[in-house]
Length: 327
Length: 254
Image (cartoon, rainbow over all chains, first blue to last red; front, side, top):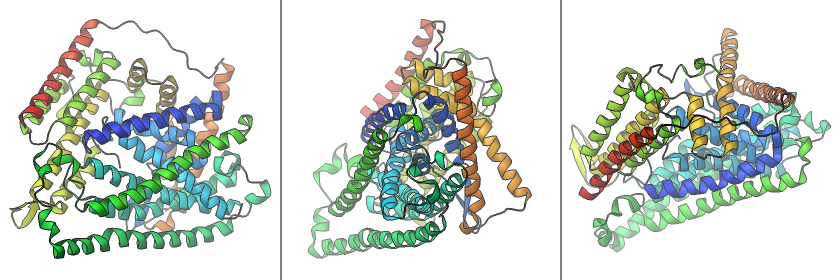
């Protein structure tokens, strides 16, 4: 998902750049409180870990592979604020030093690959923690679901930015269906690997898992239930999700288009006065079916934004209730 | 850290561009990439001018075209996406051979391709002429938050160590016959990711203890560097002005 320079319109690049700067500035202040003088070496070395973790290719099926994104994993292991810093540094270093992702694309790349997966994934993690038993199994199950959701949320965020800053006349519906569809599959690998990785850390150094800080020693042994919960939960989430997406992204546009053809307003909508303006290329390219696209974008965009905001506030609140010395 | 950390990206040469201060090169790169990003897709000549300019800078830095081409493979995934666009985009179509493709889609694909390639070329020239630690120092001089650049320096310092550790884990797994083909066989990958995290974190704790023993207070010390010659900034200004001029003309003409 490392978008190159000029992939999205200038407006989106600037707007996401401002959002990312504000959120990262906030996260830097938060993590300074969380880790105090430990922050620089620990965040630096765990950022190197995230960089290396992205080199873990996992098999998907029959020889094809995907790689870990690590946003949710970082947030669960390190806490959302430190996690988001680690992933942001990876993305920035990749742009400046490895030519992986554009420098002017950093605004949306940081937003999609660090902020949305880490904060959004952490919010989903906490929600699942509340529903699952308070045990190692519960933590593992919640990690799997959060990691899957983090990848899907990142693809949703990307699609919504395409709606506002498309540089090619590919409709939002197509981008949304393709991006979210593909990432819902990739996310399964992300979920399984993240869940098992957190399980492995819990088995050897449970004190290093930020998201499991509330567990007692006796609750750590019970890791069997979680795998079942995780598989059942994962299948359920996937089913509900694909049902919703297919309703929105596949059936309705066709239906609406047919209605439009029947009623004749599709012809009248073709030649509108904006077509000659300089905005025509950018502003309307991403929209083939305006009302519906905006409806989908509005609903999923609000959901992702709420989760990311929830993640940011959870980072803040937990900070206050934790004794800094015990971190 | 020695020069060994950057061998894959850095081209060891002694050109005028290698000798420039990192902050000047960063500003120049940003100006170049921003001009490329805002240039309208229809101004094909403008992209040709950019390509010639970047090519000349690469030649001045004594970077071979082979090196540039090999590093450009980083943009490959998005190039694949760009090739799909003409087939899925809407708008009027044109027939090429046996297939019908969308004309606005072709423009979209061209737009993404050329900007990705030129933008990545700028970054590649930057890292080929500037050591990684210098780039981070340049970001610091340009007022990036000190906390951010300090963390980035640590990340880069330990990156090679940790990826090497990952490589050894992989070798060990392969030597024991691990060759997964399905996601259900991924458990050893996940447990080694967990083990790698614990090792990295514990290394971080040891380093923190060692730093405390040497008087670390939570802030990295800064060292004064000699002031850079004004002529370097003049060169940067000229380069940026040429790029901005091309972009402005392109915007006005199309």
